[in-house]
Length: 210
Image (cartoon, rainbow, N blue to C red; front, side, top):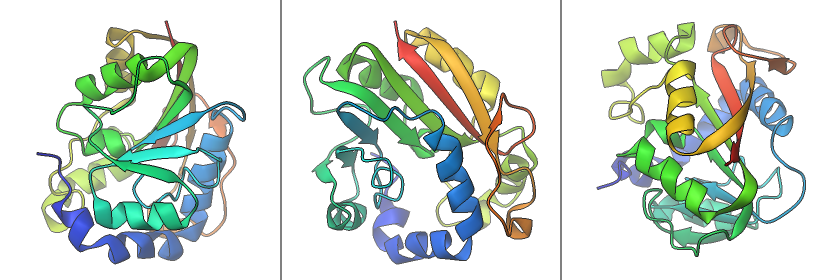
């Protein structure tokens, strides 16, 4: 079963995070914006409340949580209730796909990436945003995982692990970026996008369907 109980129950609390950490949220948007394609038909896998799909004009989203999808629909996204490991679309349907933090919450990250590749057109792009397990913020989340209603069942990944998962799933030409170089509560201004990885807690990678 997908790990959705906390999101179904605490969807309003999830939304509040973005208001409480507005500068961090916009820093994440800025980092993603550098790598998310501007044109074509897009899909967000694990669209949640649409906080990332909507600003980038991603037209379609899937999520197992109906409570979260209601927000995404209100933000203008065409939504389908489904899991990341079993996407309800024909092969080679999308020009690009977006996955933001979802990799931490799926039951099978490898299966999700294989499914994402299946629905992408040849040379289509997959963009993933996630908290780096090896970063200070990632380590803090791990230390307090049992206290967090959203992350208590999460599986965190390092940049190297995601790099390997993408390669094994049939993706190439990885381009990396990062943001959130300070502790979350100290981020009062929007941070600029930085290329590479190793400094920021929030990593973004764009990979190409081989």
